[in-house]
Image (cartoon, rainbow, N blue to C red; front, side):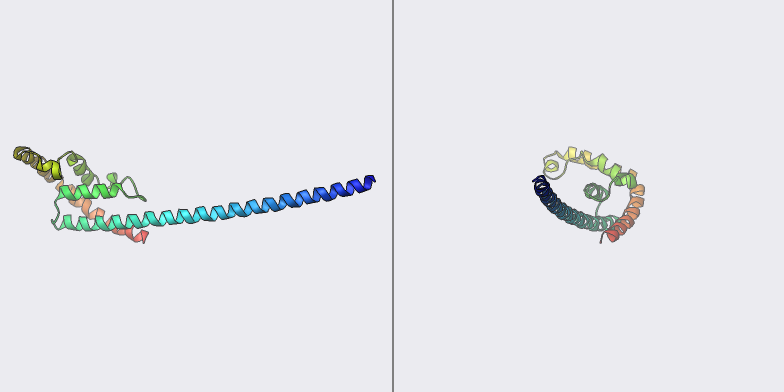
Length: 162
C-alpha cells in the first residue's frame, strides 16, 4: 500500500511540474509578445520623432535661405529658427553650435510683437525698432557665419533622418 501512495504522489508531483512548466511557458510567451509590442511602439515613436524633425529641418532650410537672400530680416529669422531648433526631438544643445542666432533671439524675445506691438505708442515702437536694428547690426557678421553652418547642418541632419 505504501508503494501505491508513492506512485500516486509521484504522478501528482509530475502533474504539478507539468502544470507549472505550461504556466511558465505561457508567461514567457506573454513577455515575448509584450516586448515585441514595446519595440514596435518605440519604433513608431522614433519614426514620428524623425518625421517631426524632418519638417523642422525643412523649415529651417527655408528660413536660412530667406535670411541669406535678405527676404527675412535677422530678428524674425533668428526668432523663428531658435523656436524651431528648440523643438527638435532628436538633437539638442544647438544654442552652442549657432550662438549668434540664439544670442539675437534671447536679446529680442522681450520685445513686443503682433497685437502687443500695435498697442504701443509710436515712440515706444520706434525705441524697440532701434534696439532691434542695433542688435542686428552688431551680430550680422556672426549671424551670416551661423547661417552658412546652420544650412549645412540642417541639410545633413535631414539627410540622416530620411
